[in-house]
Image (cartoon, rainbow over all chains, first blue to last red; front, side, top):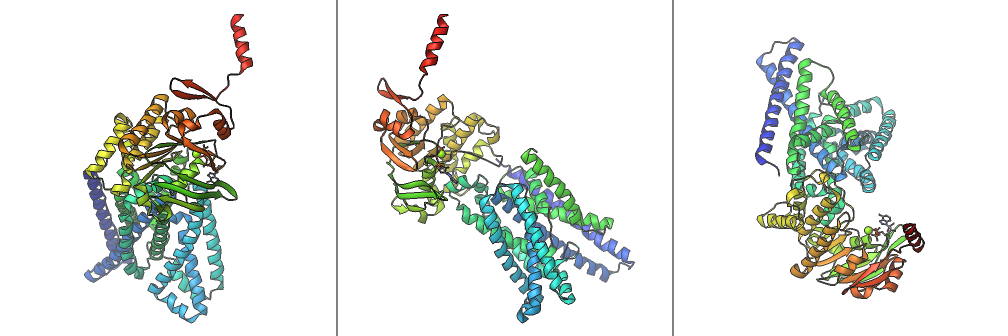
Length: 333
Length: 267
Ligand SMILES: Nc1ncnc2c1ncn2[C@@H]1O[C@H](COP(=O)(O)OP(=O)(O)OP(=O)(O)O)[C@@H](O)[C@H]1O
Ligand SMILES: [Mg+2]
């Protein structure tokens, strides 16, 4: 049985680490930036950089948390510990949706407004992503869900198809539209689409709430489809509704911060190792803390060392290696 | 009450259940027998609404089971599947606790804790209850799953080959426990058995399936009969009497070899 005190202790420990990392990040931003730019660190300058850093921090925290809950839920409904939605091309679906929107925006009047308004764009994109991913994953996951290699292959093929499609659409765009498209699709940790935060933060809270509320049901689902059903979990319905929420979460985080391919995998699995439990009520929060910690700490270190590349490169490097280890461990290759 | 009305099921073009109708007798042990692939597992799955029937109806207490909430069914029917596969690492106790989910939704109260303790004691798992499921022997694991089913504490208990992996002592004990469940706790047990002797000794009713149809059903005594069993299994049976009991012998000692061996002995 889980020791509540120990869990709380670990939560607090992680939270403190996150605060320290946030301090590091802000320090790196404020001092290093001012120093590099050669401007004296006067009060108004500091406040301005501070404000920017704070909103970046918020954006990172929101995305990292979203990625974490979505990845954990995804691993539970697909009964595997190696794959996360980002690895299966959920984010490339986002890119494709955006390019389609831009393309149609050029030709149909009201679509232009849709695309230009970040909120409308957000809702339309999310809607389309929901539809596409439900269709694809509903079809795929029903059939052969324990087959990790098969799913990976599917993700790979989906990503490349969607990417070629995106490239094709890009060719059709005129330079100005192309610029518009790039503005929304080349977001990253250092170049967030900050206007989306207003929508992303509440979405994150809502999604986390919805997922955490179902924790006990997710626990039962770990026993496998048959047992879960015979214990009274409406399995197919739950899988579908979870997929819907996952697609929504992926749309939000991709719009905000771009792809974070391996962050979810790292956060969820290390949280599992750390808390040594299957209970989702603990793992959801553990993964969120872990994920936020990785992103903020990593970005803090990167800023401090003044690397040009965003932290995602590092996370992908570590995450990719970790995934190979996981696959080897689980399948005893 | 569970009643199957003209239930059919098919995978692709292959008919697995053909217009099966069955009224399950209350407060009895019903053994489901038949060759591999006869459709026993499918029948149980349909009856417990794990897979929907292609046509026909399953009535649970007079209501169409398809119209019921999954959790409502789970409070009335517990089903142990033929094969277990577990991808997470949990202890025996935690597994058994999952059996309470339909009642507690995961928030265990003291009544739930009691049921869990009882189920663990029933299946003789006390000294291994802290062990992880993946560290148990096949029979211990099977017992842990059965304890989970017992903790679920439902009126109907479906067991698909629960004697898999159990040694002789635990097999007999398992069947005795089922008899106690029926006699003392008024439960209704449906059990898929391959060893016809276990069915003969412990079941009240036997339902024999072949090719997706029920070809015989009735009190155990009436089914244990050379002709009937040959029909069901396409295999010769000899029925011998041991005291009050009928025992089936279903392997023929090969006469040639027997003679040779006895000759060998003489030389
Ligand atoms: N998922 C499935 N897809 C296709 N055919 C299936 C599926 N499950 C079962 N079948 C077929 O249905 C038939 C009946 O299977 P079922 O599992 O009900 O047999 P059974 O009586 O339980 O056999 P056993 O004694 O081997 O457990 C078999 O011919 C099997 O090939
Ligand atoms: Mg079977």
